[in-house]
Image 1 (cartoon, rainbow, N blue to C red):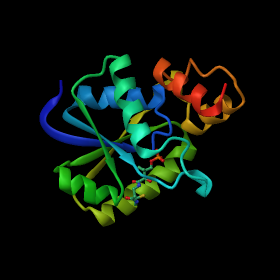
Image 2: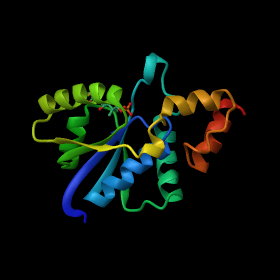
Image 3: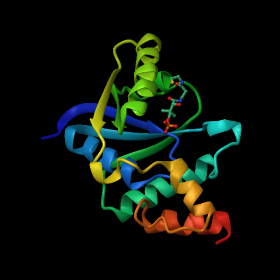
Image 4: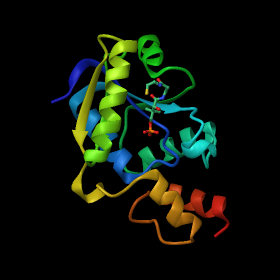
Length: 168
Ligand code: PNS
């Protein structure tokens, strides 16, 4: 039963959004009354810049959410600190997915830092659906760049965008 008064943020780079992300967003919707997906401007991993620009990532998220029938979610870009975004939005928690121990160390560091930057904003974690435990945006990008099938990791609209991006 969703807590109608609780506004939470599901943050990420979403380069691109995967079924793993969509699962976490859907579960946040089941638990909380208001969910905003915060898409980070982000310089991308390894300083290479994201494959999709901020606007493209937001559009893909909106399309993907429609494709998997997740409704009532707001998608917003942000470029500063996540805790500042939460304060502006009046959100009381961030919700993230946890896949493996490697995720845990990284996420714990971020949660500790965010607690320092925005005390009072909770970090809530949901264990990733085992079906998507191996799915990550970087794996999707790597497979797509090698012209491999990614349809089991991303919705159709993302698959099409990846094909256009990598020229498959
Ligand atoms: O999908 P990702 O790349 O794991 O998401 C990471 C993200 C965007 C949530 C994180 O990098 C973030 O919060 N960036 C905004 C800048 C910030 O607040 N940094 C301090 C906390 S780590």
